[in-house]
Every structure is written in C-alpha cells, then in structure tokens.
Length: 85
Image (cartoon, rainbow, N blue to C red; front, side, top):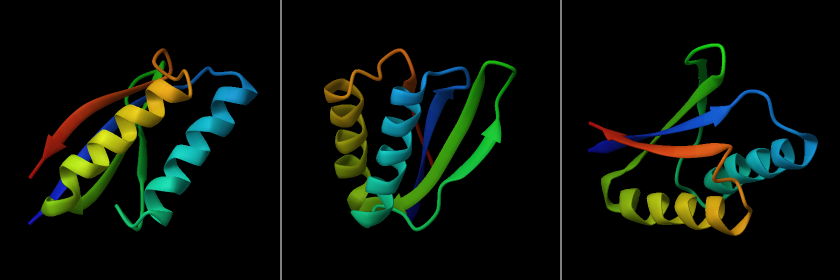
C-alpha cells in the first residue's frame, strides 16, 4: 500500500534555497520514490508538498529527504512532516 509523505516548505526563500528545493523534488522523482509531487498552500507562510511512495520505499525516501535537508542546509526551509496511509 502506498504511503504519503508530507514536506512543509517555507514560501519566502532566497534563490539558492529555491534551487535546492527544486533539486530535492526532482531527485525524489528521478530516484523513483514518486511520479508526482502535489503542492498546496498550507497558510500564508508555508506550502505543503506531498507525494505517495510504495510502502517498501517509505523509509528510504524519508532518509533521503532528511539527508538532503541536512546536507544542503535547508533545515530552516523544509520540514519532513510525516506519512499517511
């Protein structure tokens, strides 16, 4: 069964961080964790990005996102919120 992973992304970010967020989303797709990422307004400060991934890829996708956030200094920009069924 697919699991949904959600990311909270700050709306007001500089060009460097915006490029890194776009690369994160592209990497999630090219690595095969998902085919599409849904973007919605959460409130006036944040977007809510969500994607579905196979249950057996859930942990790997989460670890990838957390490593990417850490290694690209995006901790103030992107937050992993969790998963839903």
